[in-house]
Picture 1 (cartoon, one colour):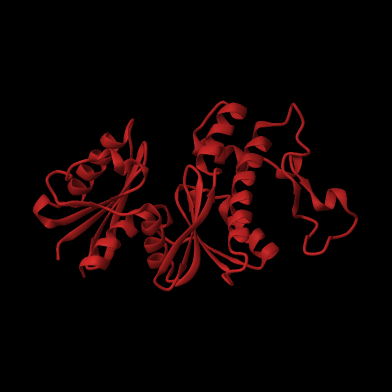
Picture 2: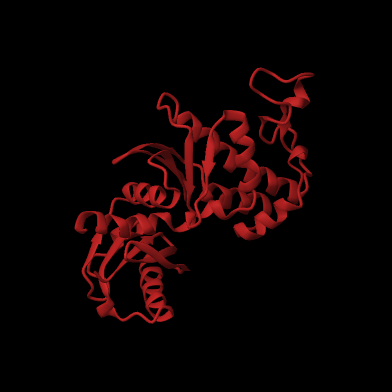
Length: 275
């Protein structure tokens, strides 16, 4: 079997990974003005960087919202498509080694997929994700650059904008420690420092996603959530999700290649059907 190329085509960002002997190799991402440019740029760069010729590629698997713009085979290599939710689940299950988990795909918005053995079911989603972070940051901070916003947030203090349980109660409430968030941005003033606003925006997005994933798990018996997508790269994840673990008695997992799980899953879908 040759190399299987999995490609997660976004509107402006494309992620690509090669699958050789069922092992992901050398994942990369490319950002461009449109999905077609991004896709072909990523594919060409992947071949160049890894000294791969087209004859080495057995199949290309596309997924993601931008995949619909691609009507033909990529560079003449036989090309198929994989449902994005299935790709999310296959990639997250492979990377996390968990058979029973909710896959939380943190993209422009956020989707939830339940994995239980071989069953993979899309159970819903919320319109809050990286797009929310960028949009609010453009309005409030004058930039949509997530790296810049994250760096600002590292210098901010969330207590200056959020209201905590300890601010409204003299003692912990049932199941709610004093440091738990009572209301997001409830303490924010009109002249709040940009660093504090950045911290508040990131915390709002990540806390909302975490809480929504726990609600999605209600009644399923599942206590494991696998986080995938671009937002897993935020350093704030290492602080916020452990706090939510303690609050809700669940486990949030961020696999090594969390950012590329959907591309990995697309490639795995081919091997699963043609193994």
